[in-house]
Image (cartoon, rainbow, N blue to C red):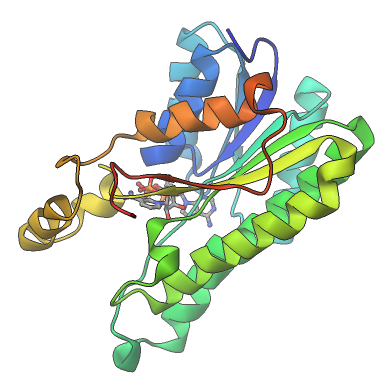
Length: 245
Ligand code: NAP
C-alpha cells in the first residue's frame, strides 16, 4: 500500500495501458479519477476500481481541449480536495508515410498526444504548486526516437520528452517530480490493429521475445509515484523488454 489515500488522475484510463495503470495505482491504495474521452468506458473502469475498495470518479475529458483539462482538475479537487499524481496517458496514432500524411492526421495526433499532455500538466501543476507536492508521469513512446510511418506520432512523443524535462526543471523546487515512461510494444487495442506480419516483426525485435502488458507499465508508474522515487525527476524510462538498447 505504497500510495494509500493518494489521489491520482489518469487520462485515457477507460481501456488499454491507462486502465492498467489505474488498476496498479488503486491496488497500492490510491483513489482514482478516470479521465477518458469515452465516458462509457471510463464509467466501467471506475466500477472495477471501486470493486478493489478504492474511490473512483469517471470524468469525460478530451485532453486536447483546455476547458476539459481544467474541468478534470476542478472536478478532482471538488471530489477529493487535492491531486497527488497525474498520469498523462491518453494518446492516439494516425500512421502514414510522410509523403502520404494529411495535415489533418498530423494535427490530430499533435493535439491529443502533445497539446493534451501540456493541457493536463499545466492545469494540475497550478494546484500542485500550491500544495508543494506532486508526481507527474507522462507516457511517451519508444517511437520518440523515430519510426517509419509515424512522423506525427514520433514528433508528438519526442515533444512529450522535451515537455517532461522542462516541467521537471520548473517544478523541482516545489517538490513536484516529472518523469516520462517510454513503453515498447504493449498488448492493447492500439497494437492489436497492426497486421499479423507487423506484429511478428515487432516481437522479433524485442530481446525478451514477448509483448508487454499494461501492468508492466503500471508497475513503473507506481514506483515513480511512490516515495521510493522522491529523488527521481526529469528521467525517461524505457519499458519495453529491451526493445530500445
Ligand atoms: P488505446 O488502447 O488506444 O487506449 C487509449 C485510450 O485513450 C482510450 O481509452 C481512448 O478513448 C483514450 N483517448 C483517445 N483520445 C483521447 C482524448 N483526446 N482525450 C482523452 N482520452 C482519449 O491506447 P494504448 O495502447 O493503451 O496507449 C496508451 C498510451 O500509451 C498512449 O499515449 C500511447 O501513445 C502510448 N503507447 C502505447 C504503446 C503500445 O504498444 N500500446 C507503445 C508506446 C506508447 P477511445 O476509446 O474513445 O479511443
